[in-house]
Amino acid sequence: MPKARESCGLAGVYGPEDAAYRVYLALYSLQHRGQEGAGIVSSDGVRLHGHRHLGLVGEVFGGYDFSALPGRQALGHVRYSTTGSTSNVNTQPLLMEYRNGEIAVAHNGNIVNARALREEYESYGSIFQTTSDSEIIVHLIARPAHAYRRDALAHCLRHLQGAFSLIIMTSEALMGARDPWGFRPLALGKVSEGYVLASETCAFDQLQAEFIREVEPGELVTIDDKGIRSEIYMSPAEVGGTAHCVFEHIYFARPDSVVFGENVHTVRKRLGRKLAEAHPVDGDTVVSVPEGGTSAAIGYSEASGLPYDRGFVANLYVGRTFIRPAQRDRENSADIKINVVKDVVDGKRVVVVDDSIVRGTTLRNRLARLRRCGAREIHLRITCPPHRHPCYYGIDFPTSDELIAHGREEEEIGRMLGVDSIAYLSVEEMLEVMSKDRDGYCTACFSGEYPVIPEGRMDKFVFEQPRYGKTGGNEDA
Figure 1 (cartoon, rainbow, N blue to C red):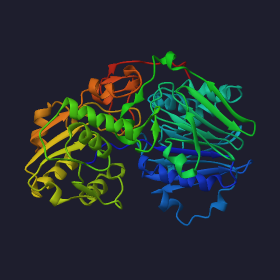
Figure 2: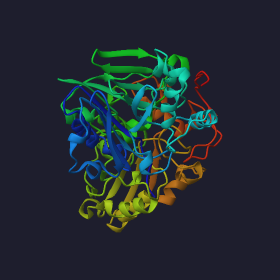
Figure 3: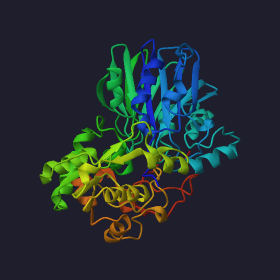
Figure 4: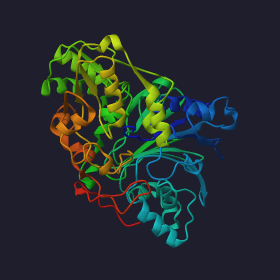
């Protein structure tokens, strides 16, 4: 079985004549964040034009005539589904029309009160076109009581609970916003002709854009022909503080990105060094499970003095198997994704560094291949704590019963995986290497302490009883 499936990717460009094509390039850099579907919407200053479909960016836009997406501003999205089924109707950006004109929305995260809001708005007579939680944002904006407010979007954002990094586009403006907890990343950049918004800064490098800063938790940024404006629609203090998803640093984000103020590769090396200090073991070589464990394995090697080598080689043409929508597709891809370099591990005591274990089936198969290739001992080191709880904020962790660590101690997990020893970082050890205040990160998938209390049941999740953590008091819709 696969690892966790991850968050969606957003990109928006304002200013250049070829805005849609630049968004297309940015989406390539963000492909790791979703492989189910891709879409781009552009504005020519009067109308919005869109193209979206299931598939990878290259499949959806390969050979595409970008003259069909004219204008100096554009918005793009790569998706995997957490709430809402895998279908073309749920592919984003969502493009809709209401009394104030056309609007496009791209969303990364999960709105945990979306079901309650949807039921309320359906009782008003609203007709929903998708099964995605993202659509509720459009209905909030379109409600007459909200649509004519000067602070319409900021007012609507205050109704939402949970994780949402958003880029919203009208015919005249591009807007970016993050939830006040700051679960998911969103960054602001500058090109000579205008501005760029993206989930990760690696997209800026592709566009030769200058990274300005991250959009702050609770901030709404508006870009139009008057320039760029910022407002805090709800401060983190109002919801009990930030809850940055620590798993962005551990696994999801690309190593060359800056997320939550730090380079991801640097953080992962520190996690590896902490592993070596806290959980040393005698070995002959350190190897990583590519690509997630590579940076951490380098750090482990540096701190332990054991040589780092390539024990596994990835087939780069398979893609990230755990974000494929169908389980059979993911398992088949995982079987051919990685091969073992026999000369590196034969007769050796091998320290395997990986970022995480969710279900464990895929990792167990890979470790068994190490044995078949002659590894004398296998010592597994993991850069985060055991996953024991689901995520409700945009990561498709399964229910607890499907998690290998649920109800099991490390020794039993090690036996199931067929290793000679296993060690995870604890929550405390993991947070020691982060630069922000320890209370500023969400660790709910490890601890069960949820910053925002889920409401009811989402389409792809069966909610378990959470331990209450920080909560936010948004006003009634």
